[in-house]
Length: 113
Image (cartoon, rainbow, N blue to C red; front, side):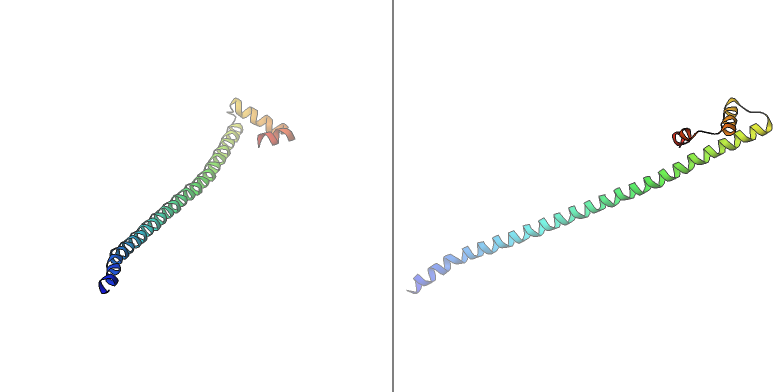
């Protein structure tokens, strides 16, 4: 009888060891998957940060470009005024003088802005 009782236990040992190995490999696969998911998450976060940084930089550049354009327009107006005062106006200066003298209509003001 002892041999009959021990026989199933001996047969179960390799099966339980196989199950243990299988569970261990499953755990390893789960850990690998979590690690990969975590890496993908951090890569995505880094990409989002970089994109936000680019967007902010573009906003700063747009603001700078607008100010630069405004500055050059102001400089052109000052040069035109200086030429008018000194009597050496160009045709564009005469046009600017006429606009200043006669003013702009409301529709022209809205179209100009």
